[in-house]
Length: 342
Ligand code: F6P
Image (cartoon, rainbow, N blue to C red; front, side, top):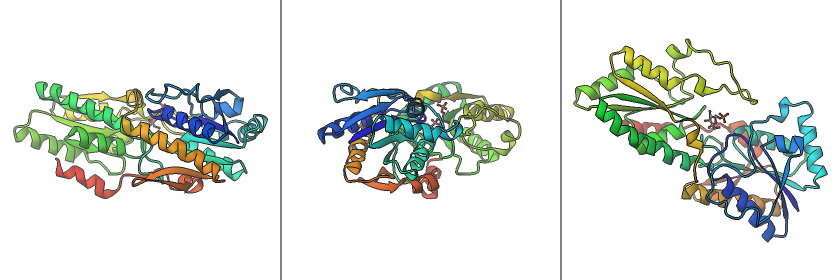
């Protein structure tokens, strides 16, 4: 087989581990791999990079993606899907492996529906792809968030401050919840749970009254607070129609609100640093397992599925189901863990 490979959407640590695994497994089985550059822009504009075991040597521990990425949406480009299919044919490809989050994988589902053999691999620091317990990149980002919260403890303590930390996560609060729990945040706000500024203020006050010198509040960028939502209007959107959430400035606005209530408060936006750096061991292993499993699925004649991790096993989930059921949100029982530590 000649197999195409691309990475789409927001980058994250562990993508190169998956690329390396796809290439190594494919060549071991006697197949060839052609990389497409910059997400769906690659197959639309025929931007390619041949991949061999030699060209993927030494990338296991390197963050980002050697193929580049973008949020290009073929549905927004005239004849986008036709151009992709034409270039796949031109390059004599038999199949395509797509590494991406919800948006990128929904395009993969569409290609499969149009008759091209396609396999998906889930990645996103948001960890919100349906059908897998974990996505590539999530644990590297969680490690960074927990470390950032650790560091903020000492400065918040020294100055008797409330520090509000903004964590990525558009619709799902996995990163904020796991990072907040691991870093010992004193209040966690995620998009799945309607937040109350009154409860937050009461909690911070309770902590000061009980002798605590500081509070760390972890808030997901996608949290919607009516009092704040009504004041800000963000127009800037990406090609999939998502609002640029950092423009909303949720952490800054919560910190401002706390100041109005008489607390000394600061905010920190962790931003794209969460997507950078070398992958932690878990993401290297996950990328490696997913890459091999994707090639094995093709070898077994499969198409239209995403490989995922459920428990400790690799599973195959129909891409159409992934498209319909994503985003996967934080379940109530995990959210309730936070209450134990307030
Ligand atoms: O898709 C993951 C994500 O990290 C979101 O949490 C965030 O809102 C978004 O990417 C920002 O991506 P970019 O600035 O690259 O468009």
